[in-house]
Image (cartoon, rainbow, N blue to C red; front, side):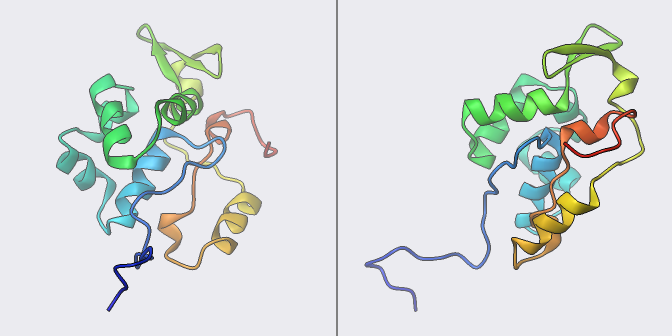
Length: 145
């Protein structure tokens, strides 16, 4: 039985810490994984579709502050690596404007070195820790930052 006099370490963390260059969907996915559920189901349980997170809906993102325990500054950082809509076909990514398709691509890219380092820093399930970084979304980016 855990002691009531000191901190209790949970079996698994309920709130991940954002990692450098992480995207909103990556954080949402890891948050869901820590609760042993699929991202789409977790988003629905929060009252939103995954699309609303992808589109940067302010209400959905506010849910990450509540459910994910992120600060407004952390949320702004996650958003900056995810891309924010600027009109119909453009997105702002890290202060620069891109054509939306430059970032929204069905092909997932990742740096195997970064993902291996993520896995080595964690003893639990990989889904809880493997974070997708925003710079990996750009088609022309091949070396990892």
